[in-house]
Image 1 (cartoon, helix red, strand yellow):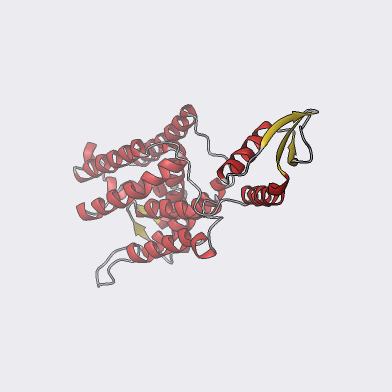
Image 2 (tube, helix red, strand yellow):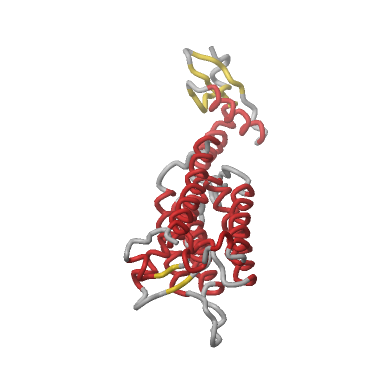
Length: 299
Protein backbone atom coordinates (compact mmCIF):
# COMPACT_ATOMS: atom_id res chain seq x y z
CA UNK A 1 0.00 0.00 0.00
CA UNK A 2 1.11 3.56 -0.69
CA UNK A 3 1.58 5.43 2.53
CA UNK A 4 0.07 8.89 3.05
CA UNK A 5 -1.96 9.06 -0.19
CA UNK A 6 -2.60 12.75 0.42
CA UNK A 7 1.11 13.37 -0.14
CA UNK A 8 2.09 10.64 -2.63
CA UNK A 9 0.27 10.63 -5.99
CA UNK A 10 0.61 7.81 -8.61
CA UNK A 11 1.81 9.01 -12.02
CA UNK A 12 2.50 5.67 -13.70
CA UNK A 13 1.12 2.13 -13.44
CA UNK A 14 2.62 -0.65 -15.54
CA UNK A 15 3.03 -4.42 -15.53
CA UNK A 16 6.53 -4.06 -17.04
CA UNK A 17 9.46 -3.56 -14.70
CA UNK A 18 11.62 -2.18 -17.52
CA UNK A 19 9.13 0.60 -18.22
CA UNK A 20 8.95 1.56 -14.58
CA UNK A 21 12.74 1.48 -14.32
CA UNK A 22 13.15 3.79 -17.33
CA UNK A 23 10.51 6.16 -15.95
CA UNK A 24 12.33 6.18 -12.62
CA UNK A 25 15.56 7.12 -14.36
CA UNK A 26 13.81 10.00 -16.12
CA UNK A 27 12.44 11.33 -12.86
CA UNK A 28 15.81 10.91 -11.18
CA UNK A 29 17.50 12.88 -13.97
CA UNK A 30 14.93 15.65 -13.52
CA UNK A 31 15.44 15.57 -9.75
CA UNK A 32 11.76 14.78 -9.10
CA UNK A 33 11.30 12.89 -5.85
CA UNK A 34 9.57 9.54 -6.43
CA UNK A 35 9.14 6.01 -5.17
CA UNK A 36 8.37 2.73 -6.93
CA UNK A 37 6.01 0.22 -5.31
CA UNK A 38 4.56 -3.13 -6.29
CA UNK A 39 0.76 -3.09 -5.93
CA UNK A 40 -1.60 -5.81 -7.14
CA UNK A 41 0.81 -7.12 -9.75
CA UNK A 42 1.69 -3.72 -11.16
CA UNK A 43 4.62 -1.37 -10.74
CA UNK A 44 3.42 1.99 -9.50
CA UNK A 45 5.49 5.17 -9.47
CA UNK A 46 4.36 7.82 -7.00
CA UNK A 47 5.56 11.40 -6.55
CA UNK A 48 4.71 14.18 -4.15
CA UNK A 49 1.38 15.79 -5.01
CA UNK A 50 2.97 19.15 -5.85
CA UNK A 51 5.23 17.41 -8.43
CA UNK A 52 2.54 15.26 -10.05
CA UNK A 53 1.65 17.60 -12.93
CA UNK A 54 5.27 18.08 -13.94
CA UNK A 55 6.09 14.37 -13.55
CA UNK A 56 3.16 13.29 -15.76
CA UNK A 57 4.12 15.85 -18.41
CA UNK A 58 7.76 14.77 -18.45
CA UNK A 59 6.90 11.06 -18.58
CA UNK A 60 4.41 11.75 -21.39
CA UNK A 61 7.06 13.57 -23.42
CA UNK A 62 9.51 10.74 -22.84
CA UNK A 63 6.96 8.12 -23.96
CA UNK A 64 6.25 10.14 -27.12
CA UNK A 65 9.95 10.54 -27.82
CA UNK A 66 10.73 6.83 -27.67
CA UNK A 67 7.80 6.10 -30.00
CA UNK A 68 9.28 8.30 -32.72
CA UNK A 69 11.36 6.56 -35.41
CA UNK A 70 15.09 7.21 -35.20
CA UNK A 71 16.30 10.17 -37.22
CA UNK A 72 19.34 9.86 -39.44
CA UNK A 73 21.16 7.13 -41.35
CA UNK A 74 20.54 3.62 -40.05
CA UNK A 75 23.66 1.47 -39.65
CA UNK A 76 24.21 -0.99 -42.49
CA UNK A 77 25.00 -4.47 -41.18
CA UNK A 78 28.17 -5.95 -42.68
CA UNK A 79 28.28 -9.67 -43.44
CA UNK A 80 32.01 -9.80 -44.16
CA UNK A 81 35.09 -7.63 -44.55
CA UNK A 82 34.76 -7.86 -48.33
CA UNK A 83 38.48 -8.40 -48.91
CA UNK A 84 38.32 -12.10 -49.77
CA UNK A 85 36.06 -11.50 -52.75
CA UNK A 86 38.25 -8.62 -53.91
CA UNK A 87 41.33 -10.86 -53.74
CA UNK A 88 39.69 -13.52 -55.92
CA UNK A 89 38.47 -10.86 -58.38
CA UNK A 90 41.94 -9.37 -58.83
CA UNK A 91 43.55 -12.81 -59.10
CA UNK A 92 41.12 -13.92 -61.82
CA UNK A 93 41.60 -10.77 -63.92
CA UNK A 94 45.40 -10.95 -63.66
CA UNK A 95 45.49 -14.67 -64.44
CA UNK A 96 43.29 -14.39 -67.53
CA UNK A 97 45.24 -11.32 -68.70
CA UNK A 98 48.50 -13.29 -68.48
CA UNK A 99 47.05 -16.35 -70.24
CA UNK A 100 45.52 -14.25 -73.02
CA UNK A 101 48.69 -12.23 -73.58
CA UNK A 102 50.81 -15.36 -73.94
CA UNK A 103 48.21 -17.20 -76.06
CA UNK A 104 48.51 -19.95 -73.47
CA UNK A 105 48.02 -23.53 -74.73
CA UNK A 106 47.80 -22.18 -78.27
CA UNK A 107 44.38 -20.56 -77.81
CA UNK A 108 43.20 -17.19 -79.07
CA UNK A 109 41.68 -16.22 -75.73
CA UNK A 110 40.56 -12.83 -76.98
CA UNK A 111 38.76 -14.19 -80.02
CA UNK A 112 37.16 -17.07 -78.13
CA UNK A 113 35.99 -15.06 -75.13
CA UNK A 114 35.05 -11.57 -76.33
CA UNK A 115 31.55 -10.22 -76.82
CA UNK A 116 30.49 -11.02 -80.38
CA UNK A 117 26.84 -10.11 -80.79
CA UNK A 118 26.34 -12.37 -83.82
CA UNK A 119 27.79 -15.42 -82.09
CA UNK A 120 25.97 -14.73 -78.81
CA UNK A 121 22.65 -14.47 -80.65
CA UNK A 122 23.54 -17.80 -82.26
CA UNK A 123 23.75 -19.37 -78.80
CA UNK A 124 27.28 -18.74 -77.48
CA UNK A 125 26.00 -17.51 -74.12
CA UNK A 126 29.34 -18.01 -72.37
CA UNK A 127 30.80 -14.95 -74.07
CA UNK A 128 28.67 -12.71 -71.82
CA UNK A 129 30.74 -14.12 -68.92
CA UNK A 130 34.19 -14.68 -70.43
CA UNK A 131 34.30 -11.15 -71.88
CA UNK A 132 34.19 -9.81 -68.31
CA UNK A 133 37.69 -11.21 -67.69
CA UNK A 134 39.40 -9.90 -70.85
CA UNK A 135 41.12 -6.53 -71.42
CA UNK A 136 42.78 -4.69 -74.28
CA UNK A 137 45.89 -3.47 -72.46
CA UNK A 138 47.37 -2.76 -69.05
CA UNK A 139 45.60 0.58 -68.53
CA UNK A 140 42.26 -1.02 -69.36
CA UNK A 141 42.98 -3.83 -66.92
CA UNK A 142 44.26 -1.50 -64.19
CA UNK A 143 41.19 0.73 -64.34
CA UNK A 144 38.81 -2.19 -63.95
CA UNK A 145 40.91 -3.72 -61.18
CA UNK A 146 40.83 -0.48 -59.17
CA UNK A 147 37.18 0.45 -59.67
CA UNK A 148 35.97 -3.15 -59.49
CA UNK A 149 37.86 -3.74 -56.25
CA UNK A 150 36.46 -0.53 -54.73
CA UNK A 151 32.79 -1.17 -55.55
CA UNK A 152 33.12 -4.92 -55.03
CA UNK A 153 34.57 -4.37 -51.56
CA UNK A 154 31.38 -2.70 -50.36
CA UNK A 155 29.10 -5.14 -52.15
CA UNK A 156 30.97 -7.93 -50.38
CA UNK A 157 30.64 -6.20 -47.03
CA UNK A 158 26.88 -5.68 -47.25
CA UNK A 159 25.87 -8.84 -49.12
CA UNK A 160 28.71 -11.16 -48.18
CA UNK A 161 31.59 -12.19 -50.41
CA UNK A 162 29.71 -15.13 -51.94
CA UNK A 163 26.29 -13.62 -52.62
CA UNK A 164 27.81 -10.23 -53.45
CA UNK A 165 30.18 -11.43 -56.15
CA UNK A 166 27.59 -13.84 -57.56
CA UNK A 167 25.32 -10.81 -57.96
CA UNK A 168 28.12 -8.79 -59.59
CA UNK A 169 28.92 -11.54 -62.11
CA UNK A 170 25.23 -12.04 -62.79
CA UNK A 171 24.76 -8.31 -63.30
CA UNK A 172 27.77 -8.12 -65.60
CA UNK A 173 26.62 -11.03 -67.74
CA UNK A 174 23.06 -9.70 -67.89
CA UNK A 175 24.38 -6.26 -68.79
CA UNK A 176 26.40 -7.75 -71.66
CA UNK A 177 23.35 -9.65 -72.89
CA UNK A 178 21.22 -6.50 -72.85
CA UNK A 179 23.96 -4.62 -74.67
CA UNK A 180 24.03 -7.25 -77.41
CA UNK A 181 20.26 -7.01 -77.86
CA UNK A 182 20.40 -3.21 -78.17
CA UNK A 183 23.50 -2.75 -80.32
CA UNK A 184 22.86 -2.42 -84.05
CA UNK A 185 24.81 -4.73 -86.34
CA UNK A 186 27.78 -6.81 -85.22
CA UNK A 187 29.23 -5.64 -81.92
CA UNK A 188 32.57 -6.72 -80.44
CA UNK A 189 33.67 -5.83 -76.91
CA UNK A 190 35.67 -6.98 -73.88
CA UNK A 191 36.25 -5.80 -70.33
CA UNK A 192 35.10 -6.13 -66.73
CA UNK A 193 33.61 -2.64 -66.76
CA UNK A 194 30.09 -4.00 -67.34
CA UNK A 195 30.42 -5.92 -64.08
CA UNK A 196 32.02 -2.91 -62.38
CA UNK A 197 29.00 -0.76 -63.21
CA UNK A 198 26.70 -3.61 -62.24
CA UNK A 199 28.32 -3.45 -58.79
CA UNK A 200 27.75 0.31 -58.71
CA UNK A 201 24.09 -0.07 -59.65
CA UNK A 202 23.69 -2.87 -57.13
CA UNK A 203 25.04 -0.70 -54.31
CA UNK A 204 22.81 2.23 -55.28
CA UNK A 205 19.63 0.14 -55.38
CA UNK A 206 20.42 -1.93 -52.28
CA UNK A 207 21.15 1.02 -49.99
CA UNK A 208 18.08 2.86 -51.31
CA UNK A 209 15.54 0.03 -51.19
CA UNK A 210 16.85 -1.44 -47.94
CA UNK A 211 15.84 1.79 -46.22
CA UNK A 212 19.09 2.75 -44.57
CA UNK A 213 18.22 6.38 -45.33
CA UNK A 214 14.46 6.21 -44.77
CA UNK A 215 14.54 8.45 -41.69
CA UNK A 216 16.36 11.23 -43.48
CA UNK A 217 15.15 14.07 -45.76
CA UNK A 218 14.11 12.98 -49.25
CA UNK A 219 17.20 14.53 -50.81
CA UNK A 220 19.38 12.23 -48.73
CA UNK A 221 17.16 9.22 -49.46
CA UNK A 222 17.77 9.50 -53.19
CA UNK A 223 21.48 10.24 -52.70
CA UNK A 224 22.64 6.66 -53.53
CA UNK A 225 20.81 6.78 -56.86
CA UNK A 226 22.09 10.25 -57.71
CA UNK A 227 25.63 9.25 -56.70
CA UNK A 228 25.44 6.10 -58.80
CA UNK A 229 24.24 7.98 -61.86
CA UNK A 230 26.86 10.66 -61.27
CA UNK A 231 29.68 8.11 -61.08
CA UNK A 232 28.29 6.40 -64.16
CA UNK A 233 28.40 9.68 -66.04
CA UNK A 234 31.85 10.61 -64.74
CA UNK A 235 33.69 7.29 -65.12
CA UNK A 236 31.56 5.48 -67.64
CA UNK A 237 31.44 7.75 -70.67
CA UNK A 238 35.10 7.84 -71.65
CA UNK A 239 37.19 10.87 -72.44
CA UNK A 240 35.18 11.97 -75.42
CA UNK A 241 38.23 12.16 -77.70
CA UNK A 242 38.50 10.44 -81.05
CA UNK A 243 39.65 6.86 -80.79
CA UNK A 244 38.27 6.37 -77.29
CA UNK A 245 36.87 2.80 -77.31
CA UNK A 246 34.82 3.01 -74.12
CA UNK A 247 31.62 0.99 -74.52
CA UNK A 248 29.24 3.52 -73.01
CA UNK A 249 26.14 1.43 -73.64
CA UNK A 250 27.69 -1.57 -71.86
CA UNK A 251 28.31 0.60 -68.81
CA UNK A 252 24.69 1.73 -68.85
CA UNK A 253 23.24 -1.76 -69.30
CA UNK A 254 25.56 -3.07 -66.57
CA UNK A 255 24.36 -0.34 -64.21
CA UNK A 256 20.71 -1.08 -65.05
CA UNK A 257 21.18 -4.83 -64.58
CA UNK A 258 22.97 -4.33 -61.27
CA UNK A 259 20.32 -1.87 -60.10
CA UNK A 260 17.58 -4.42 -60.78
CA UNK A 261 19.45 -7.18 -58.96
CA UNK A 262 20.18 -4.87 -56.02
CA UNK A 263 16.52 -3.90 -55.73
CA UNK A 264 15.50 -7.57 -55.78
CA UNK A 265 18.07 -8.55 -53.14
CA UNK A 266 16.96 -5.67 -50.92
CA UNK A 267 13.53 -7.32 -50.68
CA UNK A 268 14.89 -10.55 -49.16
CA UNK A 269 17.03 -11.47 -46.20
CA UNK A 270 20.63 -11.99 -47.28
CA UNK A 271 22.02 -15.20 -45.72
CA UNK A 272 25.01 -14.47 -43.55
CA UNK A 273 25.94 -18.06 -42.75
CA UNK A 274 29.51 -18.87 -43.91
CA UNK A 275 28.41 -22.11 -45.57
CA UNK A 276 25.78 -20.34 -47.67
CA UNK A 277 28.19 -17.58 -48.63
CA UNK A 278 30.81 -20.15 -49.61
CA UNK A 279 28.21 -21.96 -51.70
CA UNK A 280 27.42 -18.83 -53.71
CA UNK A 281 31.11 -18.05 -54.02
CA UNK A 282 31.68 -21.56 -55.34
CA UNK A 283 28.84 -21.16 -57.82
CA UNK A 284 30.47 -17.96 -59.10
CA UNK A 285 33.81 -19.71 -59.64
CA UNK A 286 32.11 -22.67 -61.34
CA UNK A 287 30.21 -20.37 -63.71
CA UNK A 288 33.43 -18.58 -64.69
CA UNK A 289 35.30 -21.86 -65.14
CA UNK A 290 32.46 -23.47 -67.10
CA UNK A 291 32.20 -20.45 -69.40
CA UNK A 292 35.93 -20.57 -70.21
CA UNK A 293 36.00 -24.38 -70.58
CA UNK A 294 33.12 -24.11 -73.04
CA UNK A 295 34.78 -21.23 -74.90
CA UNK A 296 38.14 -23.02 -75.22
CA UNK A 297 36.36 -26.22 -76.18
CA UNK A 298 34.89 -24.44 -79.20
CA UNK A 299 38.39 -24.06 -80.60
